[in-house]
Length: 63
Image 1 (tube, helix red, strand yellow):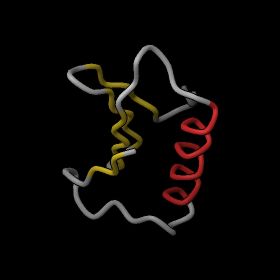
Image 2: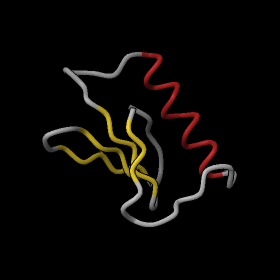
Image 3: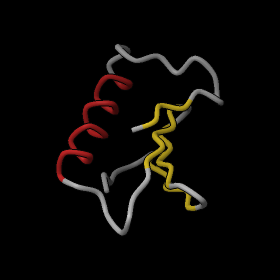
C-alpha cells in the first residue's frame, strides 16, 4: 500500500484509500498487485498535480 502523509486506509466490504477528498476503492483478496499499486501511485500523482480534481467528497474512483 502507498504510504505517506495524508493516506488513510478504510476497511469494510471493499477497501478504500483516501487522500484528501480523493478516494480510491479496490477489491483485494489479501493484497494489492504491483500493477494496482502503480495505478494508485499514478492517481495520487495526478491528484496532487491538479490533473485529477476531487470534485466532491463523494467522488470515488474504482479500480
